[in-house]
Image 1 (cartoon, rainbow, N blue to C red):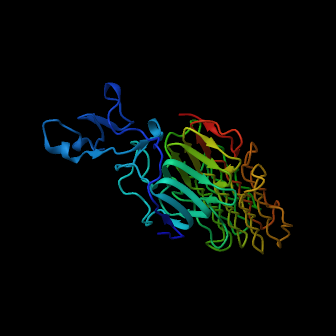
Image 2 (cartoon, rainbow, N blue to C red; image 1 turned 90 degrees about the vertical axis):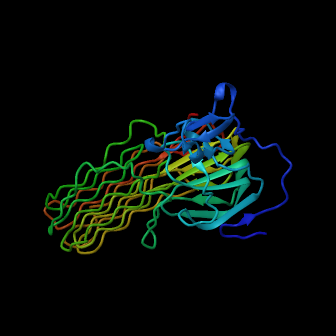
Image 3 (cartoon, one colour; image 1 turned 180 degrees about the vertical axis):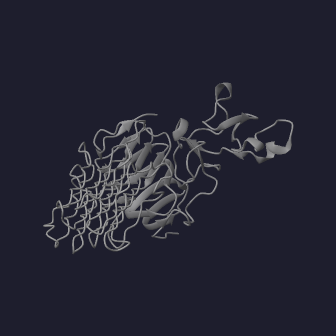
Length: 407
């Protein structure tokens, strides 16, 4: 049986020795984080204090069998079932809220978000997979995950066609912007770019000194929870109520977990999207911020690309709209996404351009200030970068930002 677009290919059981953690308790009752050894079996404990296990009451019945587990510590995951043997092939658009491939018994470590977990003996991408929806995407294979040269996981935020956020974006952990752009009928302030592991660019000042938006500070501690990126800040309103450009969408969150190996020769993209343009002297929208990629396997190889870059801010409006911010590219991944040009008319002269997003080691830049004493909106700031982690360093995979190695 084979279906493309959430395709599930089921064949005869493969002949391999799955590299998954035994659900039986280890020496001294050792179990994955969040599980407790009961009768020599690792079991998940209820999260509510009111339902905490008491050996003398019936709450013992509410515990969930840990099943097959992979990963370590906060980056461990138990699927609550026997190890899968089916081969799973993924392609097309996937809704992380409603897809039938999301395994309902899967449980990440305590504190990790609710996620759509796709499980298989092997997981292979056939062309492009585009996950969308409110939950992050997790791929769990007892043996191998393979992303071939022509395949990709597009979990980025996008501006085109009114835009879409990446899966799980915006994160509930997104910090508040440091300042709100001022609205003004004589030129509003630009919105700040979204921040995550690097700071987004501030917005530009409006033509008649309208206050610019300001990005939040970058996170100073590496995340221990799977999370998506953040939405850029909306520009200040000009002569119409919604003249400020909307902020770009944040990139999503993707976690790949395999018992034997992960091979990436294609692309995983969780970048933020470009900001939307300001109109009628409104401020430009800030660029969306990059999300998060997490990889965990005994072997991670390939010559593919991983990116969690920031989107470009949009240009501020004049008597004509500013230009939209650009989404990051997926080929030259260390080249920043550029901001849109400022609008024309009102003697603006396309001055209030949007800032560029984060890429490589280049920080996001601020939106340009509008022409002094002219009715023009300030440019939106570029979006900041996200986070990419792995339990081991993959030597040939290109990454922006650089991969952080931790267990």
